Image (tube, rainbow, N blue to C red; front, side):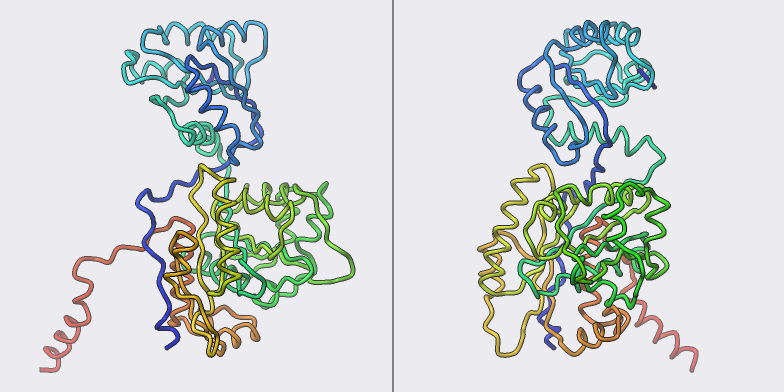
Length: 425
């Protein structure tokens, strides 16, 4: 035990009241829980199915700290021990005995009750790494286990954001690339864009890059993967932005297994604070896995019937597969296209059962100019409403709040004019 059409554009809603609750996934570890109640045991079993603990091997046993002491007299201890204790249990004496059979480096989480008599400082003195007051929820168990590693290790665990279109041709890649640009430039977060459309990816074109290496080199050479190798594959797009480009070549087919990209994501997470996945519009084992494994998901849709159906289906599936995560978000793109019938925002939101975090007006001139010149919207026109919307989406997905304006800031233009008039007089 250790110690114009732009006027139709809608800015994203304010972030949810619970704020940013990012939980980094746990590494490959073994964990064993010793519970005293069936309710806690059931909660821990549910936590073992959470996506952030997919690499962890978590088993559940009954009997509390007494059962743990007996078990570890005969077997080595895991990376993490979870102990449930009732108020009448002498937890301090139990921890002293447990310490005599624990291997060095084992981390301990105690699930106690509001009536526990043991002072928290005494628990810490005996090597308890985290103390949670029961009854616990699934997310409490997930957070407690994951925080042992993300908070204590000197390793970056990057946030992964997946962007996918509800239908082909809705501009999901354009949104992904512009949001990533805003994260890197305006939020000053080191970021990597991964273009997962190996056959037809456009990230290289949008960022005006033509790298000789990229995602294909990584996925076809898993034995070489490490941080230094991945660094050599990245194309630099700005001070804080890099690109893992798709080959966009048809000299071979790109059929992958469900876990083909896992090692790539894991390697980049260790060095990059933010990773944006440009996920192609297809439904395969690996695209589903990439979406379910992401920390935040943005679905890009247009206001028509097929997009509405697909958005609803995708959101329902992802909510079901990620019950302990924030729900996926969606935005509506290319709003107000001339002569095109559109489903009203209110009807779209009612069917999907949530509001879009943003709407982006159709502007073929600006977006077409940016695409043909390998530029982001903010590079073409930094004051464009879409550029501001991309920044707001970036803030929403990364949990970075809008900076508060200083008190009286709205009076500065008026005060400046008055000072100028006085100076002239």
